[in-house]
Structure formats: structure tokens, C-alpha cells
Image 1 (tube, rainbow, N blue to C red):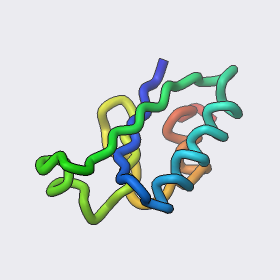
Image 2 (image 1 turned 90 degrees about the vertical axis):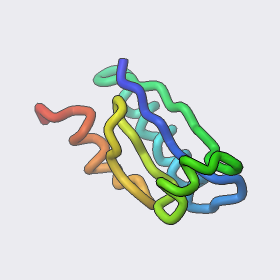
Image 3 (image 1 turned 60 degrees about the vertical axis):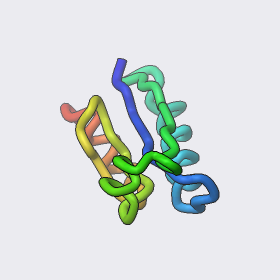
Image 4 (image 1 turned 30 degrees about the horizontal axis):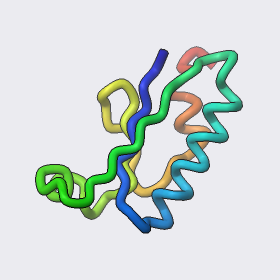
Length: 84
């Protein structure tokens, strides 16, 4: 199963939208390519705040940074389903 990590901040509207998009995609792709979503709040984590502070939300698929700021559904689908 693929692992999707979303680096986020408390009170971040773009982060909320990104999570909603990922949850919709999770439901849509559950039979083709299931994936788990983990949200990591970077608030108070200096290393992550320095690394991703200006790019939040950050989407990571199986340990590789996939996207910043927004989740593009088509690009995300292609990353999870490269054969289509």
C-alpha cells in the first residue's frame, strides 16, 4: 500500500483543501491503488518548519516529495497509477 504524507500547519486553509482532495482521491482510487494518508503538523518542529515553512502543504508519496501548496488531482493520479 502506498503511503502519502501531508506536511501541514494548524489553521492552514490550503492544508485543509489539500487534505480534502487527498481524501476524495483515496476514496476514488481505493480499488485501483489504495493509499494511507498521514498528516504531520510542522508547528513547533524547527527542522520541518525551516525545510517546508514556505511550501506548506507538502505532499510526499512513499518518501518522495510530490507537490507543494496544492494537490493536483490529475498529477497525483498519474503518480499513483503510472500505467494509465
